[in-house]
Amino acid sequence: VVFVLIFQFFAARVSDYRCPADRDILPLGQIPVTFAPLHLVGSKLRRRREMEEVSSYETTPSWFQRFSDYMRKDTKGVEIISYSLSGILFVVAYRKIRPFTRFGKASDIPQHFIRQQIRQYGRVDKIEPSLQHGPLLIVRHRPPANILFWSRKTIPIKVNGIDVNANGYSWLESVVSGNEICFIPMVASSANEHAECRVLLPQPKRTIDVGEALLSLGFAKLTVSVPKPVVKPVRNRKDTYEAQLHQYYRSLAQSERYAKDRRNGLWQHNLPPRVWPLSLWPAVWDKLVYSKRLPVLVR
Image (cartoon, rainbow, N blue to C red):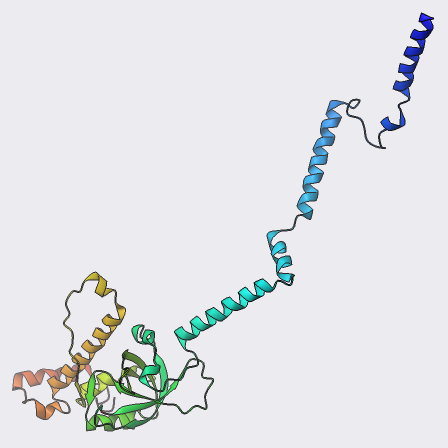
């Protein structure tokens, strides 16, 4: 009996080993780890990891694709923010550049245009006499984007820093009137209708500064005090507007000194004639330097 029991026990063990139960049968192609060799198990695990990495790399979208998918969606918040930023940037750019504004008086010119010496362009329609301010240039301003081309708005401009006489008025009528000019606002003038500017007359060969030309001909007088060339502190030296304004006034003073030395225009009667040695030097210098140029009145 003992022998039979022992035989049945070993027979059951052998049958379980050779014929496993249904719950223990693995799917086709899968090898149990307990019966597979170690090197085969390691290679399969490595291959499985590599395939998972490749599949994850192929299926994971890039940041550009994610951003594109996000922007394709109906996101009202993003649209509102984009339109708001665009509107704010447009308003800031419009206030800084004024691409469509046609100036009609001095108060229309922004303060930063004066500080930054931004050049403006226009056409001189006529020269208007004024007993209080002298001759005024009636200019039809042309903004960068001249959309309102039918507008007849004009701005009166006075050449900054000088007082023009009758001869200067005639010179402006014959030389400047009807031509395109470039004017640079120099001084803020809110009380007056006219703007005080530096006026430049473009020519094919060179650009003529109207203020310097009038002073060198003796057709105007300097009305501003010329600053002395002293060394300024570093904080004031950084003010480009003050530096450019002083440089312009020094150029005007040099042109007036040129007319005084040669007794041109109004200085012929306002100053006594120079003695012979001093009067000879300007004539010799003009012959050496300006011998091949047109007369100063024609220039």
